[in-house]
Structure formats: C-alpha cells, structure tokens
Length: 126
Image (cartoon, rainbow, N blue to C red; front, side):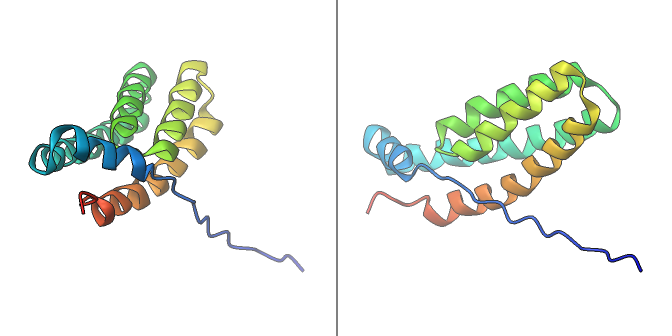
C-alpha cells in the first residue's frame, strides 16, 4: 500500500524591525511610509514579472528581476525575502530548472508573509 504525505511548507519570515525603525528615524514618518509603500508596489510588480519570465523560460529576465528584488527587500528589512531572491537569481543564472522551480515557489510563499509582516509593523515610529 502506498502512503502519500502532503507537505505544507511553513516559511519563517525575518523582518529587520530595527532597519524599518531606522528608516522612520532618518526620514520621518510620512516619507518612510511613502518609501515602504513604493517598495511594496515594486516588490509586487517584480514578483509578477518573475512569474511571467519563469513561465516563458526567460531566465536572464528572471535573474535580473530577482536581483532587483534583493535590493528593494533589503531596503525595507525583508532579509529572508532578499536571501531567497538571491537564491532564485543564482538558480536562473545556472539554468538549474528543478532548483529554480522549487526556489521560486519558496520565494512566492515568503513574499506573501513578508509583505504582510511589513504592513503589520510599518508604523514603528511610536
């Protein structure tokens, strides 16, 4: 008898709250919220571009978008998202399709939780 096990990946999200607080301290509440909002929009756009590039097997475009995502995620304290996006870029650069598929799926899971975590903690100005 064959037994099937359904895996339910649960990704831990690392949000550098100190980095977000430092952003608020350095530019003020209004500008920090604007920066975070623009970053979230840019992250969502890049994630959509990455999904389309993967579906079309456009690996250079996928890697480029992933590297851009690393920079943006780092700016707003999303260290786990930045790290996995760098892994996606590396898989695309190596043309390792099995690893790329798995890593991109992981990136999408982490992105959902990371975006929620940033919005939930965006007002750290006290």
